[in-house]
Structures are given as structure tokens and as C-alpha cells.
Image (cartoon, rainbow, N blue to C red; front, side):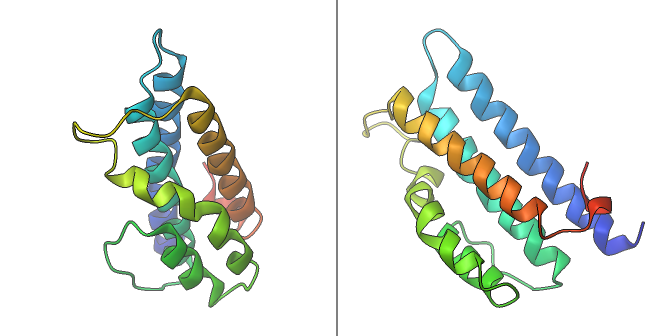
Length: 133
């Protein structure tokens, strides 16, 4: 496997693990929705960054999912349509990590998990099969 695909795989593995952590938080009784929200955001972020790594696009260490989708759109315009879908998850990178904010609802996390899956499938259709785990 070319070195660049190995790096893409590393990003995808991190994204997959974040997705698993989000699912785990949601499955607990009571659900741990604050942590699940963070891991949903992280999974989407790392999946988009995996695509950018594949395209050899250097990126800053940002958590803004809309900006990452726009960067991906430089190579595939369809990512532009994904930007408004992922944007609501951007605040999950920090909003629920500290006291002061009310935890998200189970319904909000279920919606976020649907976005995680949508982004995963979207990117899966744009990367070579060898890049996937």
C-alpha cells in the first residue's frame, strides 16, 4: 500500500474509533450524551481530514466542519452540499466538554450519528477501496 493510503487509513481508523465511542456513550444507561456529541464531531472531522490527506491537501488543526467540507469541495464539488449538513456538529467539539451547557438530548445525538454515517458513506464513495479498513 502506498504511504499516503496508509496515512489515510490511520485517519479513518481514528474516525471509526470516535464513532464507536459515540455509540457506546449513547448505549449507556443513562446515556452519556455530552461525550457522545464530542465523538460524533470528531468522527466527522477525521473522516473529512482523511479525504484531505488522500488529496495531499495540507490543513490547519481546525475543528470547523463547514470549513473542512469546503476544503474538500476544492477536489469534489459535491462536498459543498455536505457543508450545511455537517456544520451543526461543529460546536460539539467544545460546547459540552465543560460544565455550563445543558447536555444534548438523545434525539440530538441520534441525529448527529446519522450525520456521522452519512459523511462516512459519502467519503467512502470517493476514496479507493484500499484506503478502507
